[in-house]
Image 1 (cartoon, rainbow, N blue to C red):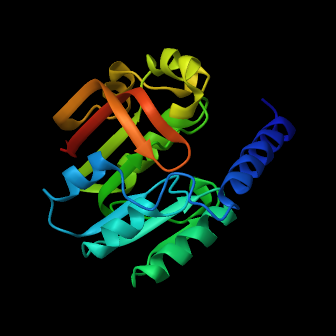
Image 2: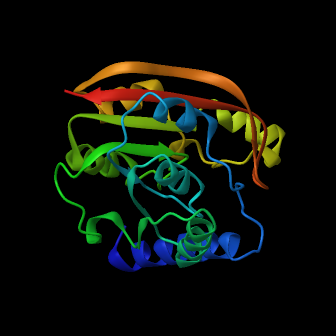
Length: 215
């Protein structure tokens, strides 16, 4: 892929998410993801990063719990919605717009990284995971929930459940083990779950759930 192709792909992705997040309704609702809620209750608040955070539902929830929250996305419309949600809930989040390498996060900056449906393009997802590992402190926690490769059958049967329709953007347990090799695995499982998150996550889907501690 040459630079012009990459720029075109980025423009397509950015336009897609700006369109989705420009509506009055919150695309995935205002409530946090259930798995994130479950895992954050087990941790002492510190610094946390939310990649591909969209309209801010998970970041705002963490801020309400006392976390110092950073987030990013490629969508400026997502940031605008997140700012409104943060103001509504009387919290602040450091929300940046752009590609990860240009956002100036620091090595060892975070106590936790929460990857909640952070489906990056297939050609960069492992590269991004390695950067998140770099930004995480030793003994820091990864919290991960995203659609598994089996989910391709679920979204084909029911588009309302959402998620990528190309299998390369979906995840397997082996990929997670490969991308995060030096972790104590607290949980790593593929599960069928029922989703009811806003307009675009509704129905039965297949996900990978991973919580790991960096050694």
